[in-house]
Amino acid sequence: MIVIVGASKGLGKELSNIFHKKKLLLISRSKIQLENPEHKSLTEDINNLEFSMIDAIIGDNKIEGVFFVVGKIYKNDNFNLSEKEVSDIIKTNFASVVRLSEKFISYGKLEDNCLLCYCSSVSTFLPRGKQAIYCASKTALNSYYYSLNAHLDKGIKRIRTALLILGYMDTEMSKDVKTFLPKKNPKEIALIIFKKFHNLNGKYYIPFYWFFIDITLKLIPRYVKKKLFNILEI
Image 1 (cartoon, rainbow, N blue to C red):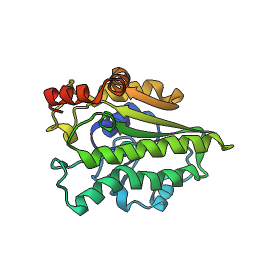
Image 2: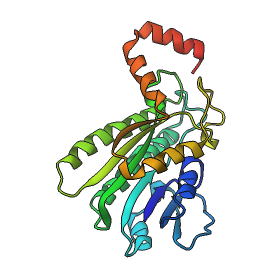
Image 3: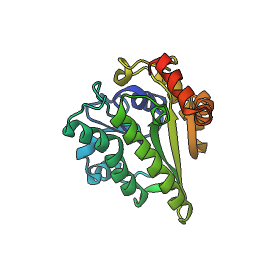
Image 4: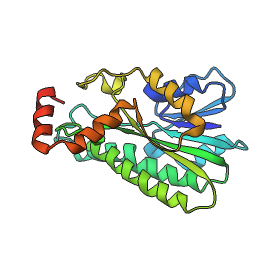
């Protein structure tokens, strides 16, 4: 069975479509219409989700993969969010993912070589003056992944972990966000993940050209970088 947290829209929805031949547990805030009897759904906000709810649905199944695709962003995330909005972003994008992740790590129903996959963003390395809390929450997720990966390398049970640094996608969450490169259809991204599923293990830039952008930004002087992003207005 594959678990997708954040399965109702965008990349999560496309992953559920492309893995449709597998047994699936689809978790989302909004209700999902199921057509396959092998698919199960759980309608709950990740911040209120108890692991016992997940365990009850999994039953006797074994887990071969968990995708944390959930994400939260506010349009006015430009250093003027309320305390509640800041907390909401951090809990959804980071704290609740960590809480559930650690439950899965100690879970007795994981297949050997099970995948835990975390979805981050190129926003974590793009120097820009907006979506500050969203970027911070995803940067925290990156840091958690590196520590988790090192921790699991010392363990006996083999669990694969993957961190996906995702480029711009054409989703409801990003429809009003200006980007300096075209947004990719989530179907394209889901297909890449699907093809790599059994070998995913480590950090991946999707699409891969973001790797070269990240390296370039690390090498160029700060004043050049600042002028570049002022011109691009991102």
